[in-house]
Amino acid sequence: MVTPDITRLLADVRQGDEDALNQLYPLVYDELRQIAHAQLRHHRDAELHTTALVHEAYLKLFDQQQAPADLKNRVHFYALSARAMRQVLVDHFRHQQAKKRGGKRKPIALEDGSVPIEMRGEMILALDEALDHLAQFSQRLSQVVEYTFFGGMTQQEIADVLGLTPRTVRNDWYKAKLWLARALNEE
Image (cartoon, rainbow, N blue to C red; front, side, top):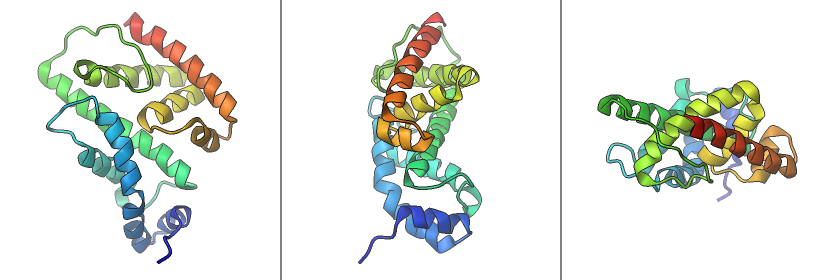
């Protein structure tokens, strides 16, 4: 059996083909699980697990049974999935933090998603806030961090999505890490 092309299915979904949406999910599920698992591997939380993160992100993407208009291909799909997972994680950790009512933030470092377990939720919230501020300075730098940290995308994949060279992405990642380290540690 020939596996349908993800890019073609995405185009069909944008055209309102519900059958294409049903065919798409099994094709992208395993990769979405890998991305979600990478996000959650350092966070032990009975309320949030890999499957729930994948389902919530997918629902955010395909609310109203249609693909977002700017979804061009497989790489763009995973880029938007990264954004959806970021939103789900941030919402979850905001809810958790509201339940326990705070505490002071400790200085943290941004290193390719390696965050101590006890700081994971706090880190996600601080990073989300810092990314919003970074986006005001440079949307592209913010996207590079989002796609790397939340989406687990390679520099080549990010370059393809943003229409850049991998070298530019690498330089942007370096600049963004410096900016975020300063911003996160100032808080």
